Length: 195
Image 1 (tube, rainbow, N blue to C red):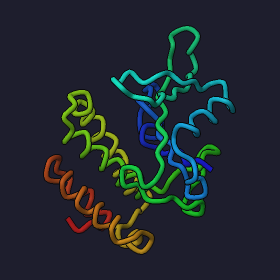
Image 2 (image 1 turned 30 degrees about the horizontal axis):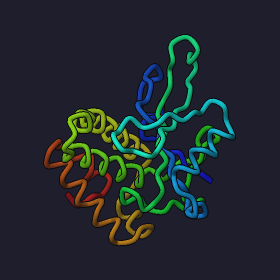
Image 3 (image 1 turned 30 degrees about the vertical axis):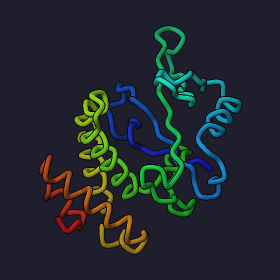
Image 4 (image 1 turned 135 degrees about the vertical axis):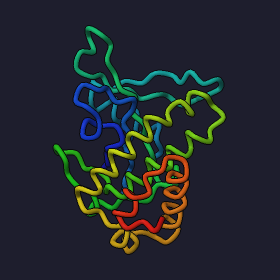
């Protein structure tokens, strides 16, 4: 089972916005796979998806894209990233922790919030200008997730029992970095983060 993350879906952005990318996290029962075979399997199963060679010098991986409505007239597509825990420090997402939204299994909001904050930090500290340019979108996504987490009564205190201490410690470090740069301490405190 693959778990689609809500990092850039329409639940966070206006309906007219095209996401830059969509992330799929592979659940623990699929961990014998790596990203490349999963991409090929997706392409074989659904003709909306296709692969293109990476443009990075020396890269051997391929980039997975999904054709969006309007593809035939304006070439609309979205990049799809396959993430296999513990890539990027992602926790393993158990099927019983997922929520189903529009028939799509979605990772828990807390995990997604931590993942997006990690992405913001990675972009902020990158040597690549194109990655650093993504920071503003990351901040917008994180703020939208914080609003959603507040609405859904997400609680840091509840989450510390669901995760290993290492993940919780990392989450707290990332949140403190985010607050130091972008403020918003009150939003995080409402969720119970000790910042």
